[in-house]
Amino acid sequence: MGNWLFGLYFCHGGGYLIGYTSNRDLFWSFFPFISKSLWFVSDYLALIVLAPFINIMIQRRKIHKLLVIILSFFVCIMPTIYIFTDSWLDGISFFIYIYILMAYYKRYMIHRFKPNKYILLIGAFMMYVLLVLANQYLKGKGINCNGNNIASKMNQFLMDYKTLPNLFIALSIFYFFQNTHLGKIKAINIMASSALGVYIIHQTPAFYPVLWSNFVKCQDWCHSSHLFGYVILAVVCVYFGLSLVSLIYTIFVEKYWTSCKMYHLIEKKLGEVYKCFIDNENITHK
Image (cartoon, rainbow, N blue to C red; front, side, top):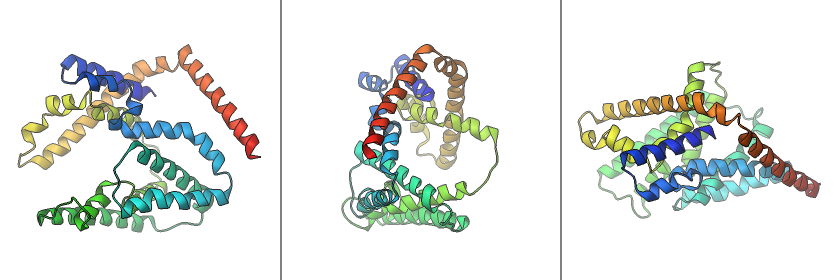
């Protein structure tokens, strides 16, 4: 919540002072949780709201397994076969599917499913490289990605996170790090804590034109022979720079907000609403 508020006010204030954004973008910067540009935040918050009710639905293994099968077909297999236009409903459906799938894995398969993590990671990396190379090869041959042809399918597998190739790549990376013990590295935890703030700032329409055009000046070097080096440098500088700003906000502002009476009142009221709904659902379920 703190990083969301930080991103919201930073984007609004920066866009207004520099005068680079439209009134429409400034307006929507106040509602990042319903903005298409910040689809991840919208879907993530919706999943948090729905999670207690999903937990009630998956209490029984047979129902849980049936939901995994049904959602696998509609959320992943169908988008792999056909090309769908992304919408908010697609995103939240995929988030719910991943939540239910991971819950099933942790409850019933974590001690039975033990493939070699290195083989899975290498397989995921090779699949991604092959998709990139195939996509670039077809483009080089002048094959248009529009329409229902092999070029459009390769592009779809590369770009659409709901397709089975992307799902395999993501789950393989997840499995690898789940079974890799890195210990506690304070620097990584600090940087990771600001990741959501960085995402919100650089993706909000009220600020990203300012970031990429006024500060990074992508238009000045996008055709340079040193493009690859510029891209790496820009990504590193933007991430670490915005992480620093986010950490400053967290240290000096967020702790005061989370300790105020209004914050605790909102937290208490939401807890009461959830408790009421969940208790009623449990009684009905029994």
